[in-house]
Amino acid sequence: MRLFRRLSFGRTEKEVIELFREHLNTVKMACEVFLIALETDDKGLFNQVCELEKTGDRLRREIALKLYGGAFLPAMRGTLYKLAETVDEILDMLEDTAIDYLRLNLHLEEDIREMCVRVAKINVKMSNDLIEAFNALRSGDSLENRTVKIRAREREIDVLRNRIYEKLVRRNVDSYWEGKILSDFIDHLVYVSDIIEDAADLIQILNVSLR
Image (cartoon, rainbow, N blue to C red):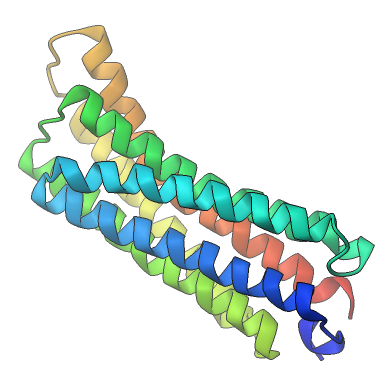
């Protein structure tokens, strides 16, 4: 029997679960908006990613207040708060990536842009996988398929990152800072998947902690 199904929830615990659901949906929305912004070179949408990060900050604070106000058992609160922090870190990383793009007014060569779009599409899929993993935790369904899928997608992004850098090392840049911000943009874009995998690992810990 899964963790959340073994506990009797009061109003505050149910509120925390709904806040987590909203937090995860905000991540998915930010990944989707970022993808469209990258595909269309829409500066306004990149700014919208930054606004969604602010929503994530608010949700993380609300979760923290309810957890340390007494929601859930003391042994669970640390892991639940760590999960909220990690979910928020996904949004932070998406914001950093959007800011990199806006700061440099990036012009990506077509083959590099295509691979970056592929990474962004996988990030969208992983954000949905993370929601499914959390829902499985709540419903009592098996998490195994969800976490295996997340790890497989993260490895796919690792392969794409290597291919992008093979292209970038042959690219001429006008200045050191242009090269650095371009490198930061790629690093931040691919690191989103690593943080999603970290969040999935925390859900796994919650799944087994009270068996």
